[in-house]
Image (cartoon, rainbow, N blue to C red; front, side, top):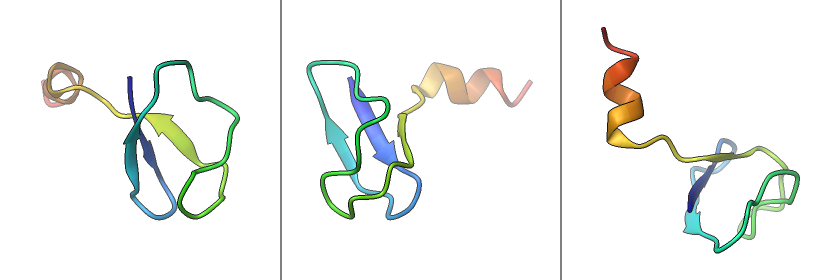
Length: 45
């Protein structure tokens, strides 16, 4: 799974669910699952 930090925009991959853990780069807990291209296109309609 791919994740992105909303604070510093650091993108990384993790084998497991990463929710609740801090960003490995900046240490903030604003980490979300990176939306796929399909997810982004669904929001445009």
